[in-house]
Amino acid sequence: MKALKKYFSGQSSGKGTLILYGRGSEGEEVMIDITEPKRINLKAIVAFIIILPVMMWLFSAIYGTESLNVTSENYFSKGRYVVFSSVLCGILLNWLIQAIVYIIINPRSYSKFAVIHNKRNHTIRFFYKGDVRIIHFRIANILAHCVCGYIPLLLGFIIGDISICYFGLLSIVFFFDETSLVWRLRRYSGQALCRYKSDRE
Image (cartoon, rainbow, N blue to C red; front, top):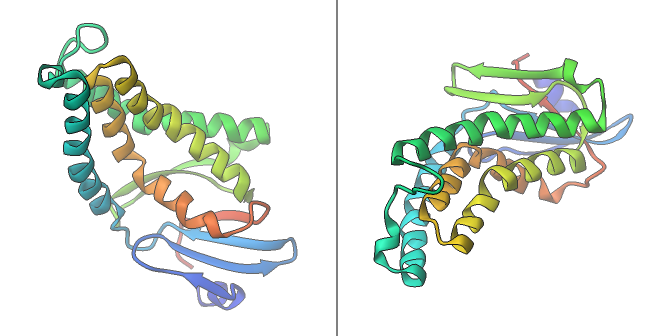
């Protein structure tokens, strides 16, 4: 790890995932160390607690208080299905869409996919074991996050179904750390190489 930090000239540590930046033989390189202590889940919970009442207030202001019923005859027959489907969408479908994007970019990418359980941080992450351009990392994540969370949240407001809004918001909670990571990488060039570090040296 010391050799790696010596190689990378700058770093953005903060709380949570460590991002190291430097220049290598192929130009700019960014390393995301997912073994670092991660507190982004707390931020996701706080964001959910803040956004939920705001969303409910806006929805009730548009469609009335009675529209805040959790159940929906059209999409979810019971409220618990909203939670169950948001888990599947926020995690599994999110990973699947990212994988499809990487395979389109590089057909042999499937051999480099990995799902790692970090016992220290109590997190499960899907990542690509190899170098990828930050622009491709952004496309994969932003597309997956929009399809799995942000578009359903907006769609719920458009069609007037609060259960779709709940579904979208809950899905967002499960990949909020990934969205935060994409945001933190905004300062780096899209052509910079990006890779994960999952094991300590």
